[in-house]
Length: 175
Image (tube, rainbow, N blue to C red; front, side, top):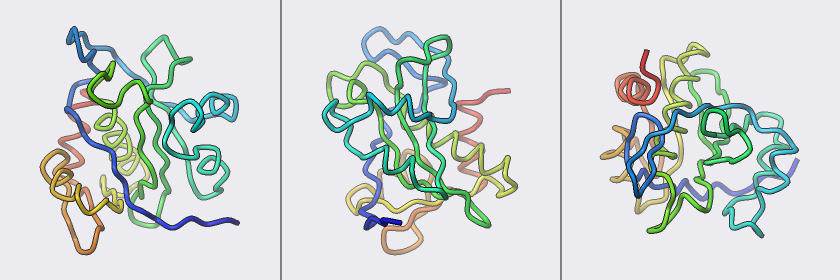
């Protein structure tokens, strides 16, 4: 199995919202997260301006790839996350917003926060108390501390503990 060097996650949490929010109008849209299918990945390519090789992620047997969509519009993928369930936490391999949700002209804010909150929720569901870890790009360590409540535990390793996970879950998945 082909392995890749971990370069660190470099998603930016633009805004913590209760769902995803239209960047211009402020309108909010309920979202759902579901497992990615091979058919979904036909349009998720570098040629279509996606940064990562999601087909590679999909083929890794230990990883699960999920898509974020707006309720009642599963054809348009807003963002993707690749995770691995470890023995005591969930590990985030990749998080990426759709190309149209990046930069100054993005359509929706809140996509990365929504995906990270989902990883936290999944961690609770799998009995790992909300604990999530990931490797950060060096320049984004403080950003993840400030925006997600993550803790820097050395090198570029970041963790989201139970308390921070609950805050994210309460924001994106209110009861």
